Length: 318
Image (cartoon, rainbow, N blue to C red):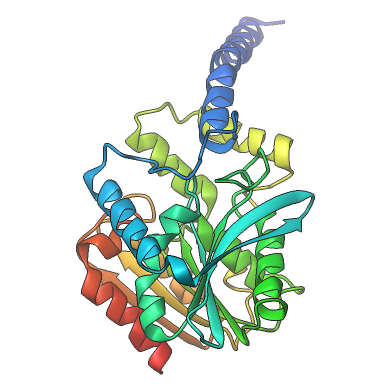
């Protein structure tokens, strides 16, 4: 072996050793991040409490939502069903309408968070079903599957709202990851025919994309931690985030569905150019997009209440 061959062998050895050392160091970090962000490690985690009490806007949303729930408590019935082996829980607010919106909250949020988004639907003539998604609130479960397997639960809730609660039309309002569950449901061949469409706030093109931006905001190391977290998701839940993503699902929904996209120009997690891409590929013939110049991720309504509510009410008048 010549000098060049020896040098190349040494370089290859150093690269392999360096990569192995990096994986040994970062694997525990990725596992810790995964368990913190996507695994219900104890029953109290992701309960019916404000997820970010130190955030003034989040606390205000929580307080206003609970005021709405208290004002309409006499209209509420506690509901429950079994899906995929999990007992799931919700609350149904019956305003005497023939259509229902199922509000699908984001990661770490219970049904109590969803109260805040109910008022425009009450004004637009909807009954309201808020749900604890699996491994949130009172519902059973351990792993968040980024909306992929939660779609089976949403299918069950939509069928329940139709056949048991008597609603002729079912609509979804999804916030961030809640939209993922909603659009996967709409793209599923087993989606109930009563499902008519979706209003989405802050949906992402793929979970890897938005999680990367969350890690950047938290100043976490990206390589190789980001993709190791994606590995843990697949290992524990079977979800392939490289394949299962809203960008693909929006292209597969039936053309007769209606979709309203609500997006923030200052959203650093579901950034505008990616959001526009979702709208562009959406297969729905009747689709609209409304942009808001104030408010961060999932905080559009608190910063633009009238415009937000008017956009929803107007969408359902058409």
